[in-house]
Amino acid sequence: MTTAHPLGFLRPGALIDSFRVVKALGEGANGMVLLVKRRGRRFALKLARCREVSDDVAKTNQRMTRELGCLIHLEHPNIIRARAWGHYPDLIGDYSYLVLDYVDGWTLAEWLEKVRPTFKQVAHVFMKLADALDYMHRQGVFHRDISLSNVLIRKDDGEPFIVDFGAGDFANARELTEGPLPPGTNRFRAPEAVTFWNEHRLDFSARYPFQAKDDQYALAVCLYDALTDAETAKDPEQRAARRITVNSPVMGPPPAPREANPCVPEALSALVAGAVEHDTAQRLPTLEALRGGLEALADPGGAEWEAPVFAPTVSAPRAGMSGRRRGRRRKVAAVGAVVVATVAAFALLRELSPTPEAPGLPAPESVPHAKAPDVLPPSRAAPPAAGVPSAAPVASAQKEAPTVSAPKPPQRQPTPEQPKPALRPTFTPEFLARCAGYTLAAQVAAGCPASQVRPEREACTAEAREYMSRLRANDDENLALLLDVNQPGFSSTYGVYRTGKYIGAIPRDRDILKKGWRVEGYLWTEGKYVVGRYTKVFPAPGAIDASGDPLPREVPICIVLGNDSRFEGLEKLEGSKPGAVVLRHQVIARYIYGEWTQP
Image (tube, rainbow, N blue to C red; front, side, top):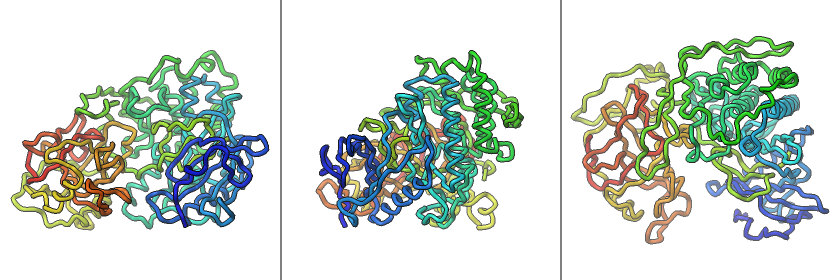
């Protein structure tokens, strides 16, 4: 069974059964979306294909079948409708497809930036989305990837549509999840899901019990962003300020929207603060409560509700907002007959100004909280902007985690700095990787060390030097390195790190090394400098070296942090604490051919 890319022979004018291709709307890791016509009417055709990193064609088709299973249960004016489905080029062909209503519109992220809607317009859009999501749950369907990218706003009337059920689920659906969390966009996961991932990320048999409240929280985050983020559709590198963290169990709930954007009406700010509350006992209880609260507030309106959320010239609200505060209690009260959240006092929000970026890397956005990170799995690969009449790529800040979209409508106690040992520790990398996933209590029970002691010196192996030569990597040559793909740092400039094993990535093409290739390494954070050594790279399937010979799936390599050949290491940034070191998410590193050295 072939898995070749179908775009080469699906030119404009080609037929997929009775649907004539007009143009490609976009492409993602799991397929593509085409604008097609039948009897003069336009539709969006979502064509599945096996991911390049997978040889499981059957599972690719099963995911589309499950997406269809979600859609055939639903008939709501604000949810995309499926009109036909099949296989191409014949009934037992290689490619399964869905035909959906076509929406000529923007993603919600684009609409917020382009239209600059009023508070009343935003409220009415989210009233309809809350109603649609509530209806969906009553039919036994979960979307599981509600985000600013998976809502389309029709241009001619501003009507919203929930799209892209590629991560959806329904009662009795076949289990396709391959890890603790279902596919989704990390920013919009509920704090309970983040906590579950932190506790089970090394247990691939664990499964998070996704519930309606998870979809509800994701919609609340979309509304929070609509009120606090003036750059919803921008790439992270183009933003004037990083987005406020919303779902970190360590950092706690985000500040009320009015703290970030003083133009937000006070009652609306209280309602949304209750909707993104971390304590489920104090969180807004239902989607109907959110919908009713918006209706009760927006319909009477007032002058402040007719004002735009952000003026057209505004680029970002309060650059550097960290969202820190010393108090964190909010209580939910009633507005009329509807549940509305009121916000307890927030203490001082500290603004942290960015420090100069390392040469050749993007400018920083702002320094985040100096707290231990909530590690999250990588979001789903970015899909096409289906339903939007453009084949242009979608900004990663706007579209972080979908499959192909369907168109239309423990905190460790600080430990004293350890002296350099004369001998290497006896702990194996496998043992340490296992310990990295335990809470503090579990570490004690398992006999895991508080941190791996950094070895004094170690020569780069002859095998690693040989492969670096095959990769055209020169001794002391600098490169950009993404330290940890599991932190939600693809969309932020800074991360928080502790001693342990990490999976990083190459953030941009570099001769034979290509953007997205994973690298494995270890960071030591106890000393004056952060020392890091990345010793494996995982090329993409089919990758070749400088001579054209194929590369294995795992290649030994020697990469150290820092660009100073006199020693290895990076300085800790402002806000670092023992056990929680602040570093840039992308740093300068270098290849070495000799011995590791000490700072």
